[in-house]
Image 1 (cartoon, rainbow, N blue to C red):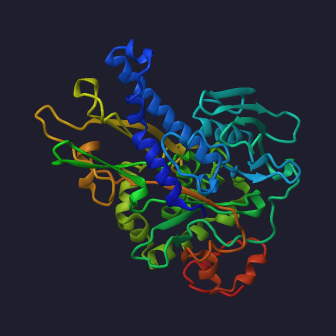
Image 2: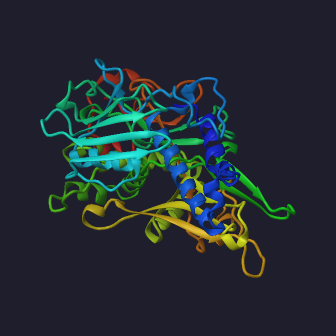
Length: 471
């Protein structure tokens, strides 16, 4: 996994303080604008800054720059970020392959990367940014790929092309043999001392039949100092703790929601996947629905029982299984992503007390939106100082306490701040910095990991209640 805290500390600087720099500009253009116009421009610039960081964090591992000092001024000036999106093409080192099984998923992945509206019918689209460069998406029609992206981002000079294609369209290198070390629902802790560490959940494992070589992880545990920005009133009588540097990954937020539904409602999840009358229903973004036998209801039942046994609901979500289930049915899975926007340096009349958080909500719909595929994204804005000069409380250091954010959102729905990470190894664990808390295969085979070289298996009904089986 990436070294999380360093990159998120940089994000805290970028997302939390960049407006302070903007507000200090003393150009002729700014002087000719009204305060209201300057405030609007500053807010728009912060949105662009958030988007820039989100894009860069998806293209590269921000820690790979080395010993460079991250500051507000130089994070976009650096030009030696190493590309980590997808996997490197063996013949073209500046090309990265993103294993993608459908045209729809290819379009969605680029759309999510740069926050634009395109779909599988889009022939081409060019994204441009004055501080970063450009990326041009083109649909491919010759069967060698779904789409290609020409990349001209000056911060990542080692990346010139992204190719979205399935293993069958390429050289099948991603279709590794046997089983991966991690599966859906595996849990690790990023510190061997569990009382201090944070829990990460695998929401999309490597899987040979799908051509997936990386595992994707999310953490919804309490935020550390690198993900918190503190604001204080001038008199020091009121303090706020804002989430920052969380990043945005729509695909794997969606995967978390679907994974939870599959664990809590395994039979219904499988029935929906097998229902031929439900058109365009995704299975973990672009998994082949014919491969549901490898992730059938009995697999999910077994994972759920192990989460029950190991009290993982409480460790991961800091609430009970029943409370989580009730939240999904009442208000959906609510995740705070990206960070925050607050022009705290402006006067009150110009909106200086207006604070925004970014929220994704996943609920169980019908048709292609069943299995928690009904997603909404919104910006929640609140004036942090009321008309009678009281303050709105917001403390995102500990989202397990609803009272920390109830006044901001105006309801008692449970919410979690989400962070993302990726691991590129298939057959081995994350390493000494992470402790396996629960893994499907280690639990199933009592640490006999030689079986990872067997073919992927289908979980049987009579295996659900067993702690260890022999196969």
